[in-house]
Amino acid sequence: MSASFHPSDELLVAYGAGSLDEATALLVASHLTLCPRCRSEVARIEAMGGNLLEELPPAPMGGDALADILARLDDAPVTLPPPPRKPARATASRAGSQIPAPLRAYLGGGLENVRWKRLTDGLEHALVVESGRTRARLYRIAPGIPIPEHGHGGAELTLVLQGGFSDHAGHYLVGDVACADDDTIHHPVADTDGHCICLAVTDAPLKLTGLVGRLISRFLNL
Image 1 (cartoon, rainbow, N blue to C red):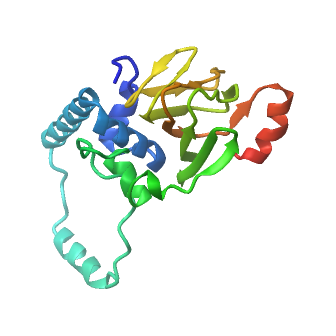
Image 2: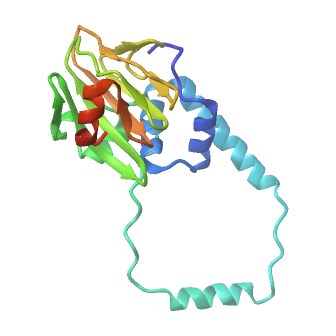
């Protein structure tokens, strides 16, 4: 993995604090399985958070606090809700896996379980998770295929899982994260030595450029 393309420090802090939305947390967790540097940084952030909690003074409690808690437990329904779906804790990827363990948990296995939908010649996608306005999608791009030039209505994070691609900002390989915002207009092109598979998270629709792009973008739901 190249050393230049990592999530921002703000994203890593938010992940360590557990404050990211589900789709973005999935992408960061998947990146951490591929990046020892960021994995160590998140461990440091979590340790700092634990130390800060230990240093907080205890909050005063009323004399009837224990009785009140026990009464609430007695009144609680017996049937418990299902646990929330969240990315698995980031660990090193299993040897031979094509995609990181957190993403495998969402797909129920490997890439063979993905139901791809064709966008254009050589370009397919599949929705993985949607949390509010934020969506995580897989993209599969045939060798050498360019992605139509587009801008963004908000932020976009793209994690390379297989192969690689290039745009005006650089060359992205497995484990790299490309970051774009509403000022970014780019024209990514997949490497020629194999399919490029990426996990992309957006919080607003993409904006295809040109007359044809603007006409078809409403039908692509990107």
